[in-house]
Length: 250
Length: 149
Image (cartoon, each protein chain N blue to C red):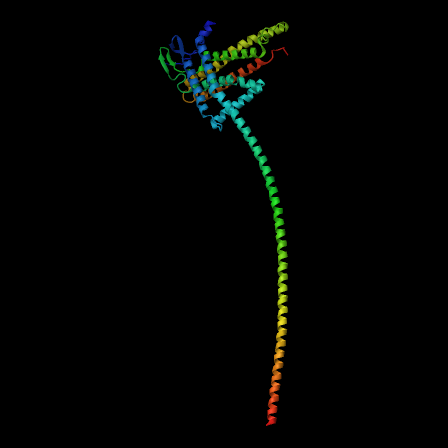
């Protein structure tokens, strides 16, 4: 390891497959996917009418989440419809974030290169591609839900408001900008938290390698869970806003 | 803008790859986790509802059985009382009959004995009279014989 701290803002491509760059974050994402899907398959095989502890816990979590979503969205049916999306966002991001400091992820294992060590695995959320893709999906689902619930014209009247006078028009423009801004806020919030956490643990390890990183890692894993929850909840709330009547229509 | 994208390593190929990854996870978890768990929850709900319904019906049936049993016990009680009363009546009737017949027999025996005693007495009297007479005759004969000598 060379002296000093090397902080890389973007995921490093490890190699190219038919012109497609395989980065260390993408590799880690695949690992997370394998873990999640493997867990789901394992659990599905063990599902029983009389639940074990694991199944009971998962069922309780599902019911809690469904109840909460039904409360937010207003109907049980809407909760059931959006549950898979919100739950997947949470599970995917939470798993990716919690595995952030597992030995082997980050700076410890990788390829030696001219600039130092290229980590083999990098936390997915420490790559803006991952968070931006999720933000785009969330944004897309929110807008499509708005159109599907209210109809194209009433949904668009949210943004281009000609009946409310100049103030109404300005409100529409602001709403459009703020909705587009969600793409940025969603992606950079998650990216910033996780990336900053990695940098902080790295710096702490540089100062006090034997004591300080462990509690910080625990704290950063907690932050990772919170960020997963925030991402999922914000998606939920924006879906709620999208299925509500536009301002001034009622 | 391009500089910004380059600084953060944003690459549309990677973006699409991560979006597809999310899609795969969403689909897989939907098929293998959410749907089965929801089905299981629904199934358990129906089973529990069935169980509660069954329990209610069983309790109803039990209450019915209780009252039926109580009724039967009461019926059996009255029947038993009747039987005992009849038995007691029959027994007392029989016992008076027995006592009556015993008394009658005792009376008959006593009368018989008295009669026989009377007869015995009369017989003895007759016999003793006859003996006295015979002795008198013998005495008379003896006297006469002495006189004649």
